[in-house]
Length: 216
Image (cartoon, rainbow, N blue to C red):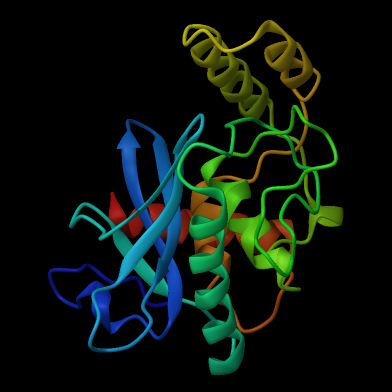
């Protein structure tokens, strides 16, 4: 697993698609999809920054990045799909939440189309959902395990959402998800470079720890 610092290897060197990770607050990492159409255009990062804030921009040097383990054709398809997602949804369509529901994006158009209107994603599950919409399940959910600290994190996130005048109906629905599996940013990011998906829990945790130690 090669973890790149943009000061040593620029984002533009990504082979079509990869993942970028940064530490946004103490103990909390944030990820997005790093992509590049061709060597003549600057790389960009597509990420869910917060509630109804989907951002497509050139990445800042605070990020480290990793290439994707998929073959060239699949990576090129994902690049095109990322562009469709930002084009068809805009910046204020996708809510932030702690759902782990499957199939929230139309696999052809990229449109945000969850079965439950009160569904929301984290930065990690956003990345996972984009990949899975094109048939690539990064993590093996069947092998996942609950961790006590995850419920505390989920509660804290919903408290922050409540402070931002989010509807009570949305918050009430999200509270039902407290205690559900959490897919941490570093575990998703550390699994994306692997040659075989889905990555089981134990391996994803191992990759996540290696990644955090190198970027801290």
